Image (cartoon, rainbow, N blue to C red; front, side, top):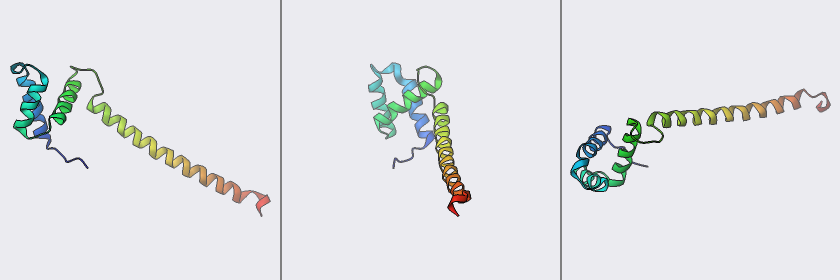
Length: 103
């Protein structure tokens, strides 16, 4: 199970990367430096920065809000499919019980 990162730490690390980008020759260098400074994984920080850029509209992709809505809708869809399966089974059972040929 992934460990929970403090949202304040995540925001601070992303902010540091975005603020100090111009001081480094590449994104990888600034991300590595900030990751060492904040004691977080460089790959995690790279993904956080990309998501922050998407959420800000600077990069194409699925925003955090869209992702949360899709997850919610998938869970709702799964629950509704389970309800339909239960109702189909109950209908088949009761149709069989009410059939006069089964008496």
